Amino acid sequence: MSAGWASAADLAALVRRGARSAEAVLADALERIAREDPALHAFLRTCPERAEAAARRVDAQVAAGEDPGPLAGVPIAIKDNLCTAGVETTCASKLLAGFVPPYDAEVVRRVEAAGALVVGKTNLDEFSMGSSTEHSAWGPTKNPWDPTRAPGGSSGGSAAAVAGGLVPLALGSDTGGSIRQPAALCGCVGLKPTYGAVSRRGLVAFGSSLDQVGPFARSVRDLALVMDALWGLDPADMTSAQPAWPAEAFSAAAGGGSLEGATLGVVREYLELTLDPEVRAAVEAALERAQAQGARVREVSLAQTALAIPAYQVLANAEASTNLARYDGVHYGARAEGADSESLAARTRAAGFGPEVRRRILLGTFALSSGHYDAYYLKAQRARRVIRADFLAALAGVDALVGPTSPVAAFPLGEKVADPLAMYALDVFTVSTNLAGLPALSLPCGFTAAGLPVGLQLTGAPWSDPTLVGLAAAWERALGLDRKPRSP
Ligand code: GLN
Figure: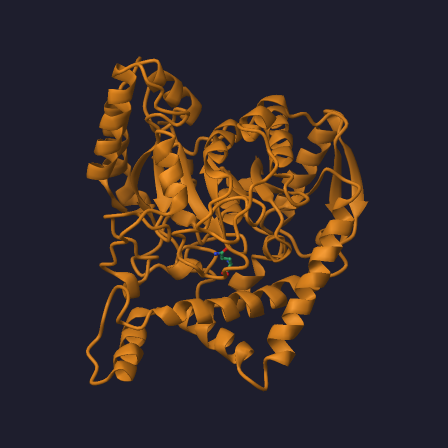
């Protein structure tokens, strides 16, 4: 069995009982990445030495009769905005070329402690700013379903690595949709947890009040397996919390979830937005399937939907402009020549930041500047409060809100990259989740006539993440889709 298409759960079971060595699983994964990634460009680099050391540790534990953990021997890819000790971490920016972090992101530490093998770092839009992975300083990632199309973004490399069968699991980050939208466009499962459920320590900050780390997998069961390793308080991240979930809450939810008797809320305002008719049809068919399984569907209202993108753009960019001020040519990564510290910083930034990142920094700095602060930043903060209240009211009578993750399926590379507003408009269903701090999951629910996957988004009340996973597992079983883009 190839590590590429095997499930994480099956691989871990084989490794734990000594039927397959972690080293053999790893060799297979690395060979597959070397053979297939040149066509996808999901990875910016692999880290075979680190992965081999981890595999040897797992195999030694098995030989000693110890339990190497629930992710034993499972290859995992890490978005290149998560720090990996000793392994270059660039955020797909020239500014961070050559930056080797001295420590691991907490999520990297946790998956390795659970036995996973970190095989490499995946491509993204520079500093996670984008929805197509085309804003990478090292070129775009291709969608495994159609290499002329974008995988979505910003975690497009992680989504493509999982969907393309290179690895069973990957980690990404989501500030305004960067896990859910590429999961939708690549036909895999992705979860943005409730803000605070997963540590952000070692995640390179974009919008600190919006950023969350989360997983990609090809099945809800595998997603649950990695979530169980990720969640929980990290004293080193002051925004992290200890959810009142039992151990292995996600695996239990994935095993026991049911649509029978569930109430699903369909957002009226979302139905009125412009949507690719094929996306609409796939989501409607999935809703009918859920009803056939005993779910009730109710219309709910999010009256403030129109505020979401403007409020997100102001707040995310304002936070980005302060977060990215640390890249001054002295502390991290690349450095240009300069006579004094000011010109050194200016030249480093001019040479290091790509056009989209510069645009965001300028917009964010403008929104925070005196004279404009009240009109933009403060107003956007108020909008954020209204949006959250809107969501909490809509969620009060339902188990989850359901709708499309993205208004379109995978679009051709090059189609939107020169038109920032068209790119930002893709985030209409995802950004409000981050503004409200809620959990949301994208599940493949069907295909367009051209065979491109369509994603269904489930959004829940704060800390209902395991409930979402349970509903998604039941829905996945009911839909029974074959989600392999090409023969292995
Ligand atoms: N696409 C959104 C943006 O460009 C969200 C990105 C993200 O979640 N990191 O800002």
